[in-house]
Image 1 (cartoon, one colour):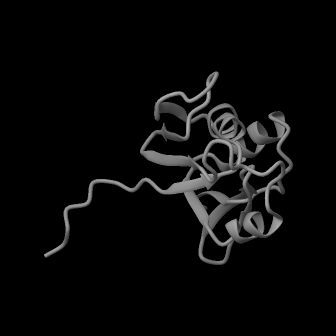
Image 2 (cartoon, one colour):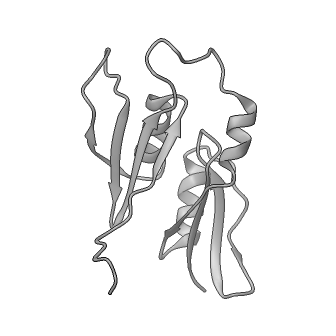
Image 3 (cartoon, rainbow, N blue to C red):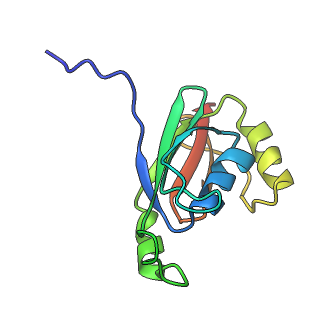
Length: 134
């Protein structure tokens, strides 16, 4: 008997919450639907964002006062091992929208297993693939 699962919401550890929220909200179009209490001027440690059926949660990688001045390059490089594959019916339009938002991406490609894919990275180095059946 299968467990009755009703969705999936990956939790990503991020270096700079305002930068990450701005990327998912202002570049990809997610809505900020929840966050932890404010600990400073507009700052919070956890956020939930939603776009269509896609839900993602962000959490600060460091507690208040413990964040280093710059991201750890090894940590960022390891984030490329995590890939978020998001269904996107119009990959070509998404490509144009990303370019218009100043995001440097290569044009979409159709891969051998029949998906049209557009690859990019979020500010923390997490891999994102927007894809749809070609």
